[in-house]
Length: 361
Ligand code: ADP
Ligand code: MG
Image 1 (cartoon, rainbow, N blue to C red):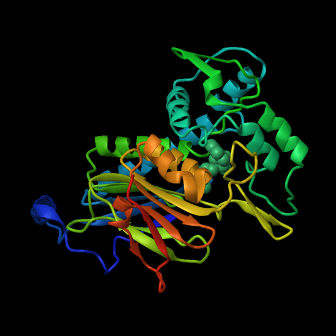
Image 2 (image 1 turned 90 degrees about the vertical axis):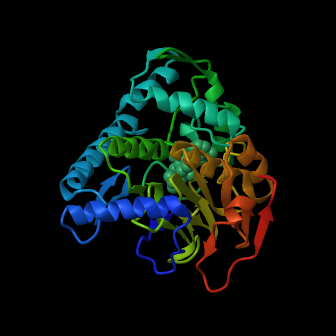
Image 3 (image 1 turned 135 degrees about the vertical axis):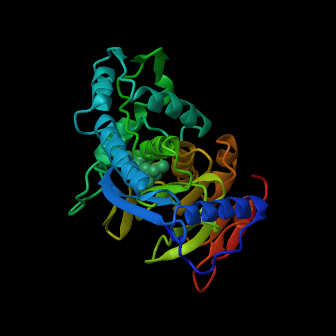
């Protein structure tokens, strides 16, 4: 999970003349409009079961307020259409797959399936939104974890043996069919990224140039905070507060998957919500993965896939998914980074972690 900290005092000076020019332009515009300087507006609401925060810089107040309303409506619409467990356009698809019937997929859901199919393949199946039954067996589709214990090996094995995969799905136009009735779609690892992308696009089309759409710490940041870049904090996987921070440039999305988001403990073992589709169990040896990418959907799917890949195998999967900026924190507290990520990340903790930099990325 990350948090935005546009006011942080450790900001680096602006890079490049473009920043200065844009900042100067904004300043002149603001002065002409009779304000002291461009203002930042923030708005928060709940969606996708998490806190969404929209930050807008340098726009008129009326436009910012309209944008907040648009974002709120967009999120509510997506939440209703993509819900994997309450009746929705997506559950209709799942019902048809289970019944062995083909279905005309709703236009809201179709792009999710198409893009997730290709991302799943590129992730070598480690990002696998076809494992909805497994997520349900573990109970990670609900929020109450009191008294939880892991399901039996036999029940996990039974679902793994069904081998649900996005490759089982065929799309002809909007007509979907599955060769495997055990596929159950759950876009918990992708819908937030795809959705954040749509909302940010919508706000940009309204004329907003500097904005952050942040859902529970996963975000897309566009433009800058005046003459300073947006600075994004990455949450510490085991303590309160910020572990590291990065500045975004232009239009970038920062997504983190962590084992601290949804989990229960049973007999001193933590069982969290990021499942290894090969074993059917929570992925081991990783506590969090942060990915920065221009496409928020790719960043979201990749953070999940690299978490599953783990501290030894993530570089190959990152490369296959076209992801360059990665930081993985393993269960020993070590940070594994691509060279490009190492060049931009700043550790914000007293004792910086042991860092392992992989230059082939
Ligand atoms: P978060 O939702 O906390 O940001 P993720 O993006 O990693 O975290 O998504 C985790 C969710 O995705 C789980 O709650 C579950 O619904 C689903 N999921 C779990 N494991 C996988 C996986 N290997 N591939 C695709 N989806 C998964
Ligand atoms: Mg994800």
